[in-house]
Amino acid sequence: MSGTEWSLLLFLAFLWGGSFFTAKVAGLEIPPLTLVLLRVAIAAGALLIVCRLKGIDLALPPRLMGDFAVMGLLNNVVPFTLIFWAQLSIDSGLTSILNATTPISTLVLAHLLLKDEKLTRGRMAGVLIGVGGAVAMIGPDLLQGLGRDALAQLACLLATVSYAFAGIWGRRFRDVPPLLTATGQLTASTAILLPVALLFDRPWELAAPSMGAWAAVLALALICTSAPYVVYFRLLATAGAGNLLLVTMLVPAGAILLGAAFLDEVLLARQWLGLGLIVLGLLVIDGRLAQALRRGA
Image (tube, rainbow, N blue to C red; front, side):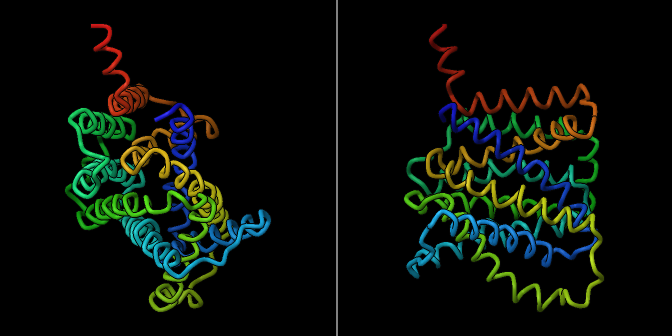
């Protein structure tokens, strides 16, 4: 990837770094299906306004609308619901560790389904190093919970598989403007989720969420969803599915660094070590470090 693409990847990691925290806060008062619906509906509404202001034509062919529906199902409806449900039982830190395994699923599926994103030993080694860094950053003590709440942990792993399929499916939007693609998939996700949430959660019967919960929902929708997906589809078109979903290895780092910057949280030695391992893993995946070493030799 180019320097610009790496910069966008880091930016995306910081934007998504707050999603686990905000979802955990909002999920204490709002059930998973309704929370996912609020997340995608508010994000879609914001992007629709932006499209209108930019004069983008939203009259799309039926085929493209169908593609957006599949993308929304794979990239929003299924993984968001699984992760939000899992966070009712397990810590957000452990959730982010499990989510950081997404590149493994993506590299394997891309190798099996795509001709131009084949798995190499270097890329797999880099992913494993990076996932190890994510585990080190959050703290190995969280892994003690791997034997408990197995169903919730399985849900997180299934979410990573859904993300991997979404990354592969999203390649068909390379010629569609990223803003339009992000708006289309979030709008389709809203249409899919609305009847499901009304049927199962019956939100009109729920207690009114607190102001803190609503603030978390707005942050989750606007900061952690609408803006990041524009960057997501921009990167997907240029960097490919395997490279793009490396962002999940960076998300724990983004969350911890944001906490240090804005909440005066202190970075521990293991977190610096984990950050170093993530950087090393990304350098191995990028391939330029190995090329430089070979040239030096």
